[in-house]
Length: 463
Image (cartoon, rainbow, N blue to C red):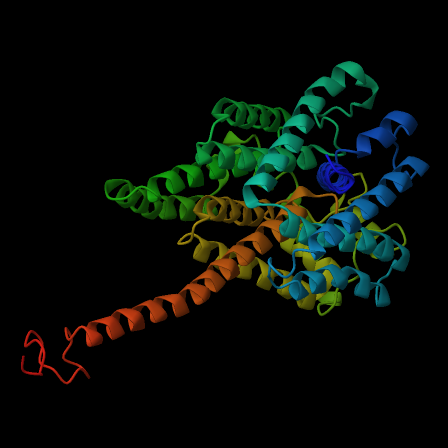
């Protein structure tokens, strides 16, 4: 082999090696970003330093937050090279990411708003990057992996570190409700993989079973109910995608499900008893009137991101004292009320607009080529609405629903735009092909339009 041949071969080898190292680094960044997004890495700080009421961040938590920010920037930068191909509206998510930081201007605890708002901004930035560098099916595989690992770690944690227990099964997470929401997303990703029918069905079925069992062990009624909703939508989706009788059965079941849902919405005592909850949702409805009064005090922009329940805000102590539970309340235990406390009508309205927008985009994707991912996106958005009844959603960087909300919505929007551009590019070729066929028929004397020769009459020149 000549010198130039050896040089070219070595250059190609080094290029492929660098590409492989880059892909490995990007994959590692995705895994770390999702682990941080589900809040699973907080167990490291609790193992090393323990936990107590009012504990501040340690050096380990600050290092993990820094790595989280770096991984978010790396993922976003990796997607910047694909922006000529992958197109969607990045402006709206970035506005949503900027609202928490802007709230520092009127926050009752500016330092808390700035700290939490910075994490939230980079969580949304990483979610945008994930939508650019990840296929929808790949994203679901990663989510299924992260949630399954978290479920296994949660089952093992009480045996390895029993001192971290707090009287309730919460696994490696800070609260049982956080564990329950992660398991909901694990079931969502597992059902998505099972619907694809491309192999590994046993793996996805095992992930669904594992996450469901751990959700039951957490005794998070909201998450367990959300998992039942996912199973129901999955059945509807499978039937609807079948032509003929299957689709009619799915529509009939959907219409039959509507009055049942209305009944439970009006009189929820039966389902609450099944889930082991009282009619006050474990005291949540007792808190809501006081929270509503606080919202009325600052209805437009709210109290600031993660500022109302801050120890610096005396109003939160008043609510805890007036409710009389005997402990400090740190959440409204309702997604909409929590949003109104932090962002007011303006910020909450904007996030609701994004939720409705992604819901419409996912519904439009049902008629495209990525129908399975569209079903999973609808499942996520519906479960977010269900969880918001008794838990906070879309208000934390370390909440899996926040990352998936933006990423899956953007992937649906990206798919719609790509399909629209493909149809636009294919249209000139179709028109050109029709014109070519028309000209050929004119030349051959087989068309009456513009030929000057009646069809079937042959040549006008006598032989």
